[in-house]
Amino acid sequence: MVFTSVAAENPADLAVQNETNMIGIVTSGAMKSLVELLLSENLDLKEQALSAMITLSTSPINKPIMAASGVIPLLVEILRHGVSKAKSDALVVLHNLSSHEENLAQLLQTDPIPPLVNVLKSTRRSSKTAGTCTALIELLMGFDEARRALADEEGGILAVVEVLESISLRNRGYAVGALLTLCQSDRAKYREPILGEGVIPGLLELTVEGTPKSRAKAQLLLKLLRKTPCSPSDLRPDAFEHIVCDIVSQIDMEEISSRSKQMFAEMVRLSMELSLKRIQNHALVLASSDL
Image 1: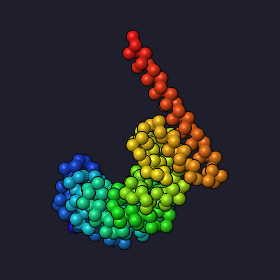
Image 2: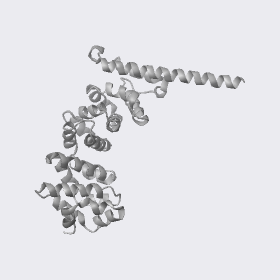
Image 3: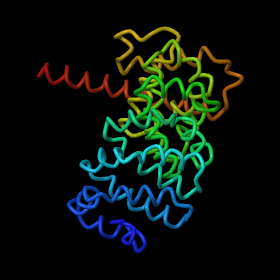
Image 4: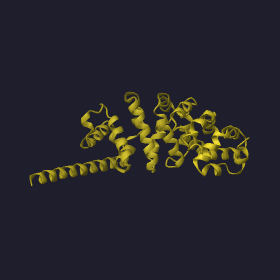
């Protein structure tokens, strides 16, 4: 076993030095030993193997080689039955490997959505583990079988919506991306399930507090959640408050929390301020042209 003696000490030390070392480790056949360690009943050896894989899987050259070793099904099995630390590490390895598009096809064959949802339900929505899990779900939403699996899994969409309401902007960005891809893929099929999980408060808050990228995604998802499809005029910034009003008008206001109403009011206030700034800027342009 070329890598067992290294793993018994500190498996990440050699790889962390540089990418050349990482590639050398994998191309020398180390994955066979690492896979054997994952199959071991010794939890310490499993954790050391996972630690090594986290580092090794960051190399683009290593990603397809590692996947070819058959490690992806084993990592998903850890998500199903492993201890908490092993699950978190397996998630990181899977996410790293999934940046190589061909590896996603392998991952899909393992029916990954149920264990991902279970991990998401069992961890704090603002945690790093929840963020990695949601990021992986976002990647998988590009595939019809994964979208159907998320919608069919009990509490699947709700788990992603709850991440949207967490305090982590990073995690919320992944969540809104996943929900947006889901809704864009088949609006008629997924609009009601998303609305039914109470997504509006988190989206409204994200349009106010999110990063520029996540704010844009939240606004686009709100447009898709309207009863009628978006028209080109809906893409204008000054139409956004009308879109949200349209969505909120479809919901029983007595069932909306005061927090949601406050967020809606804040969003409209900010939109009005932006509209006023646009008017002022337009007036300045006109004034300067008259000089």
